[in-house]
Length: 116
Length: 112
Image (cartoon, rainbow over all chains, first blue to last red; front, side):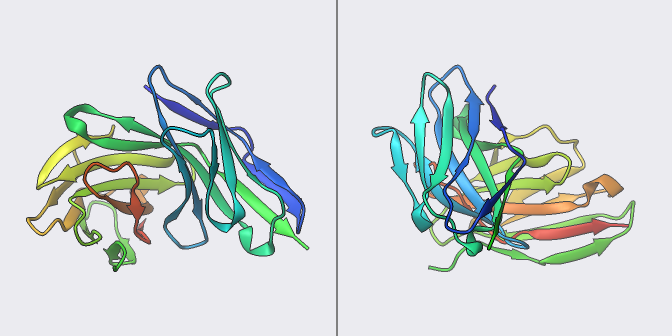
């Protein structure tokens, strides 16, 4: 079974500062990794995904993440945050199940609060 | 293309009642998954349907069930509601052969 740990439940940061949201996973097989963002009263929006290939993945809204197999990490970064980035961020691992189905296994989420 | 739609957006029920939530996937997507989101447990996988068949199920009691229709629309049903069933229920659809799931806005269920 796979599990996902988001190391920080809350991350406060000032506008225009850089930010890193940390994610570690455990798995005995190859994984697909995702970062989703959730704004208040909305569903989840995909920021970026790692399936294979280059370990540095670029996503929407200026976010990027680096897959580190040896450290089993997939940390999310942004060089300069905006007030509008205030939201809940979820790291997820895609688990291939029987009958070719898929299920996302989510971390508990990190609340990013950007202040002026 | 229209995104994943879920109805209703908000629902209030009382303990012991049952509820049915609906999800319309993105056109062409045959896989529909359901997730429960609560402050305590976070996001948890409920089940996945593909071509009207339940393909996978999470660790939830039998009170939680679902089905998928020939047009890929899906419903989930919760019977004998408990206070702990209060949650945001998210539906996600996925194109065949792809990992990426597209989420709807969710249905907020409150059980009183």
